[in-house]
Length: 78
Image (tube, rainbow, N blue to C red; front, side):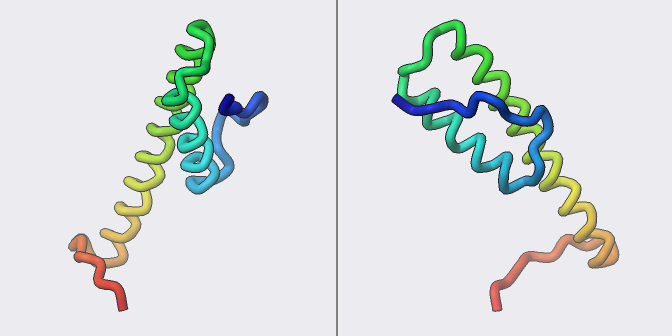
């Protein structure tokens, strides 16, 4: 049975921590092993994590636009 973290902070400490928790949560939800009562709670936590991740990405994108003088450039690996 997949395990869901018992005590998690309301706000993740970082984007990477939120993404890791979200990936674990999705695996747990997809396993079909959660009791129905816990399913809704975990789904809501997943929605919170997804919003946090999206907000973090939008903030970084905004900073990049400022650094690039308002033009969002396509990233090209070196």
